[in-house]
Length: 294
Image (cartoon, rainbow, N blue to C red; front, side, top):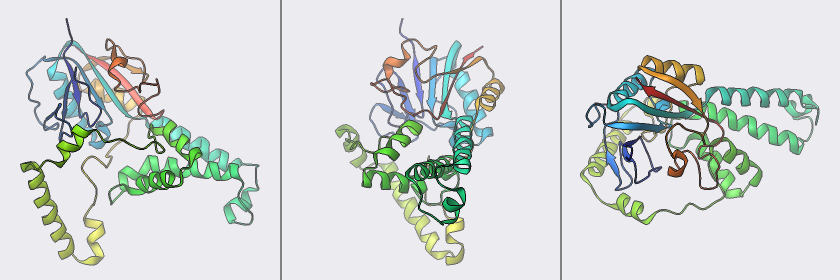
């Protein structure tokens, strides 16, 4: 007997064996759903619900509501698998890198910090890793324009074909900056189609731009945020806080997992958290947690 599987806030990571849902589908296999409201499914509809890198875009209060709604549509003993950026991993990496920078004996600390001498290659490498970890931690929380500092960093690495920096980024977050991305033709066709939603969004954007230029110049960038929906983070989780949130939503048997380990039968074959080469899709900086519906 096949399982009923829900891929919640799927983005472009989809599989035909799953019911894939999102706010704004970019593929015909994805169903458009308001993820923050009552889901269009009856109680106890699914054996499994999976969501990756979505909860961090919500306040903890809204995330709790979403998890309770997911619980409603899960069958008894059904499994929820949640993936979010791992705050503990990120802060540990940051503190370790900071410590190495401060204690570096490769070049004198005074010279490195005050510009009194040329920075060594090793120090520059540590400095980049430090800067990246700051971006990874804060950029999606505070950025005011689409892409933010992260986008600038990605563009610079891709343009310069910097293999050392690209390798570090791929290990951290799974982003491959040196491989040209091939756009799926069906996705490209879908994106190019004119729909009522796209017309409405275009009109809304024009209206917001008009308000932006009417507002006093001195406060424009403080009032208006030029980012796309889904870019900004509103919270971060570690193993303790995500475990507690799932418990508050009514889930039980809560466990931390690996990207390549799951209680969901044959999960790796769907290539959601794992790439075909066995590497983690979202790099080493994600937290994976599963729980069951009582």
